[in-house]
Length: 169
Image (tube, rainbow, N blue to C red; front, side):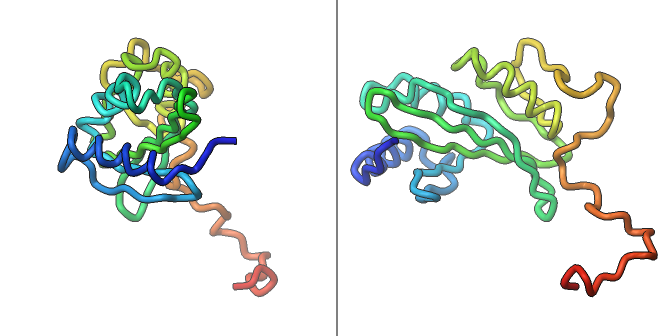
């Protein structure tokens, strides 16, 4: 179990604001974890800083995944980092516009990001600039859609035999 340490959160936020200033869009505690939202242009540099700073030492990329915000026409990437030295976790989020879904690759910081970025590309269509081999790994190569985007209705809108009152509508 990781520890929730308010002083550690304050240290992280202070260092990030000192080093990245206006590139930090927001910071908050969500589900007992510090969550920092940053501009996509600095995300790789920020991840490198979090890994290499001697006071922080976020030396493990736990996970990297995508998100889709259809109402904002945005895609997002979430990074979960863990400091084994301080037993502390942090969530870094960034967003990109749906029409230009480019985000810098984290493979230069953590080679383990390779497969996670490929999976995120495969399911959300986020293009990781600088990735060494960005291609589909789970879906067929000639697929043009991205299955985890919220672009399709969940139900068949042409059905006439369905009674909506049975579904609380």
